[in-house]
Amino acid sequence: MINGKPFGLNIGYGFGNTTAASKNPVIYDGKAHKLDDVTFHFQKKDFLKPWKITSSDGRFEMDFKPIMDRVNEMDKKIIASIQHQVFGYLSGIVVLDDGTKLPVDRLLCGIEVIRNKF
Image (cartoon, rainbow, N blue to C red):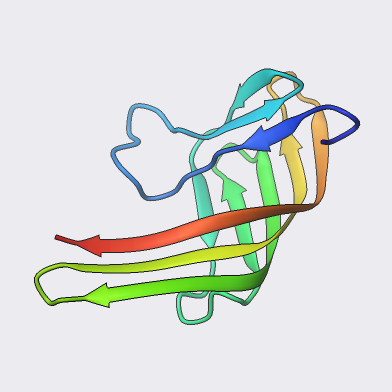
């Protein structure tokens, strides 16, 4: 909830072909607001250090403060899966389609970083 209204998001980076469109909606008060491409800035060697998450249209500017990294690794040489589910707090500003700036303060969320080899 933000300002007493339901808030949610589903942002992604690096999965599939996003040349035609991104898959980054922010949902606020029952309405979807479409973001452009989103980039996750983090240290691959230490997922628990602070992250920045930004959008190419400048409408999503967030700090992510990790509190836990759930890791699952499997490597059988032919197939492999390395999964990080990083949980923490998201804080920053999201700009809705109508230009409204919505502050986000310590939203508990999870981010997955997964590398698969088949």
